[in-house]
Image (cartoon, rainbow, N blue to C red):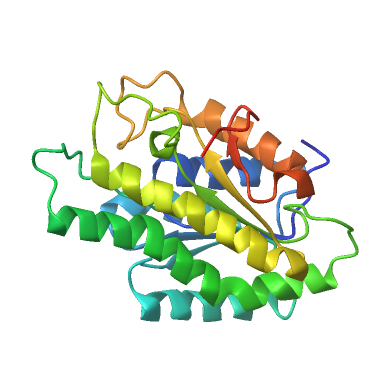
Length: 256
């Protein structure tokens, strides 16, 4: 992917799993981004040790505290990013942070629905709103025509478990709060694509597949490395025709 040159990228939930994998893949590019911002709720926590150690080896990697459910935390992170990019904007925002509570229709309740929805749907909304000025600036400064991740983009990490047309893996795991939150996230992506297109910002939902992570479990067929490699390749090829789409790690367009 020598042709994938993106000036700056921010990935939420970068302390483990797919988020950490994406950070590693960006660092491995022949021409890595000038700035890679990896966010985590607890930079000093044990689960953030690996990404913090990576930042000590790579001057272009900055680890930021960011809780997607806390507007003040999001605002503080955006200010830090602005200080680093020094007027150049943010090219790519990947809303990857998410949670699940492994619920069933029988035990689903107000508390789990509320926290899962707040994290998986409201969080990406708030993060995107706060970073919108930096995304606009990147788009305005770009010499590229059309829409692309090189110019300015919001990528929301979703799941085919949210697809109303597919409703995948119901027998394996019901998890209604997670499914509902990601279905709402897909609608958020569609709304963003309509509102931000004229600013030159691409907006897409991504299905990363079933991956061996803390959330995906060891039963999953895909490794983090192979999935994040595929996602980066796909990101390098996204264009205006994928704006407002639900794209898989394999490049397939999935139904809402």
